[in-house]
Each structure stands twice: as structure tokens, then as C-alpha cells.
Length: 238
Ligand SMILES: [Zn+2]
Image (cartoon, rainbow, N blue to C red; front, top):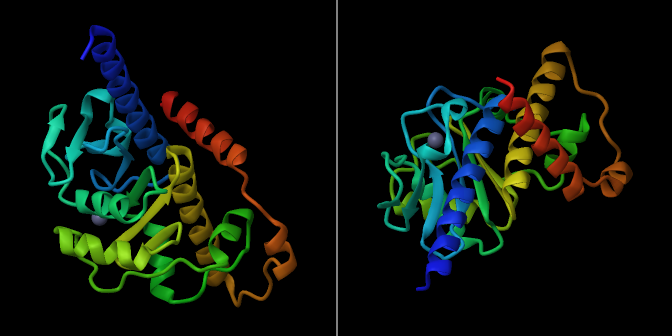
């Protein structure tokens, strides 16, 4: 390896740690904190594993120094700090889905409360349009932590080719081809669930977007990127 290659690798690792740090803080600003639980990851460019925050800290506390590279067996191979028990969520999804480059796992109040009602997600808002057709699948095997490879594989099987998977009484996992998509769709899912809860608490939900509107509506990548950048800016002002 030349000196130039080595410098390029260090730059990549520094930029990736910054990316995961920004994404973690964006999730906090977007309302997805659950004390020190939940994580966002990025697939390593060289196939070594996943970049994610170390455990024991909340999303809003993360700096690049708290980001580690976890290999496919759960060993921390770059950076310092303990890895999350549930790293299997990430490694299992990346193994099953070559199209996925970022995964968010959050323990979210609104999604869990809405899941408990066992009613479909209705497109009451633009956020809800993302999750109405198709509905996200539900991983119902357990509400416990995904703490081994076998559980991770089964979670990825339920996810299949969907954008995300609900984990009732636990949270959810959302995926994307990039960080902006994974983070923004996670935040939009929480917002859509919040709107469902608000409507359901006031009475019967009688109207929502038509099938024609649903077919026409699209969250384009530029909008997801703009929303993500807003979250990153907002987090930086805290
Ligand atoms: Zn979890």
C-alpha cells in the first residue's frame, strides 16, 4: 500500500465516522432517541463490516470518536468502544440485501403504540404515504433484543425486499441505499405513526389519500436529502 493509499483510507474512515455521527444526531433531532438505545449504521466500503456508534451513549451525544467499525462477527476492528448487542440487525440485513448501504434501528414510542393497535398505516399525511402501500411487515417472533445471528437472519427474512420492518413492542429497522434515506424514512415513520395515534385517539379514521393520489405521490431522493440535511443542521445547533 502506498502512502497515498493509506492517507485515502484514513480520510475515508474519518469521513465515515463523521457521517455516522451526523446521522446519529439527526435521529435525535428527529425525535427517535430512547436514552442510550438504537443505532444507525453504514456499510463499510471495503466489505469489512458496519460502521456504527459504540454503545452506552445516546444519539445526541455521538461524535466521530464514538463511531466504530464492527466486523461480521461482532469484533470492533477500528475505533474504541463497546459495540451494541444488536449489531446482528445490521450485519444480517446487509448480508441479505446488497442494495442496502445504511440501516437505522430505533426504539420508538409512537411506532410501538401504533403497532399495538394492529391497524394498518393509513396515508393521512405525506409521511404516511411511504408506509401505506405496501404495509411494512411485522417481525413478531419476539419483542426481545436481536442478540444472535440466527435472530438477525430471521429478522432479515421478514424484512425481505421491503424498506423496513416493524418490531412490535421493540421498535423497527429501516433501510436505505444511503444514510439520508434510512434516517429520513425512520423519522417519517415515527411522524406517520404519531399522526395515526392522534387521529385514532380523536375518533374513527374516515378518510385518507385516495389510491390515485397514492399512486402518483413520490418521495424523491432530493426531498429526502433536503429533510436529512435539515435534521443534521438542526442537531448542530443544540
Ligand atoms: Zn433494539
